[in-house]
Image 1 (cartoon, helix red, strand yellow):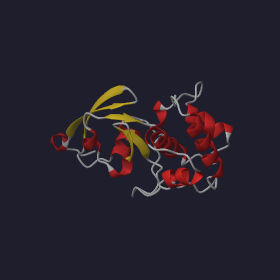
Image 2 (cartoon, helix red, strand yellow; image 1 turned 90 degrees about the vertical axis):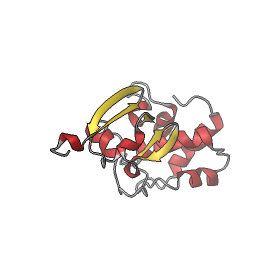
Image 3 (cartoon, rainbow, N blue to C red; image 1 turned 90 degrees about the horizontal axis):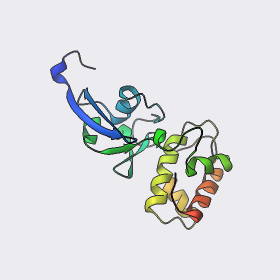
Image 4 (cartoon, helix red, strand yellow; image 1 turned 30 degrees about the vertical axis):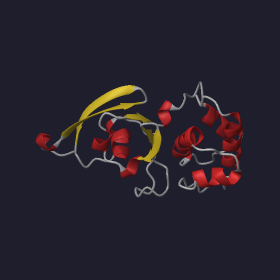
Length: 164
């Protein structure tokens, strides 16, 4: 953060149902605001170019790359991060499907993948594995080969219904 408080701007966002107001540097990325400003470290930062999908969150009900967005651009918006998807005691349907189908290994891509899947299931028809692959093509995973992730999404797409 800048040493000069007059260089800071006020931002108010609602994240996972809680409203947060902070004074931040205008150039702060939303990913940094979430991780360092709010302590929500589930949003991972990989490439910082919007290519890997590790930082995928929901902004206004649609998936977005938090590393490509300035925090001030989120003023007044509703944001959901992986922390809003479930708890260790009560996993969301997406998290449970990942668990049931062994859809994660190292876990680095998982938060962004879960957030992208939530958007896909809410806004896109997923009737074939090719549609699922296309929908997930913006989220990179180096460990799984995607087979188990696709199986989890296939099951969720068949069930459709509330994801939490």
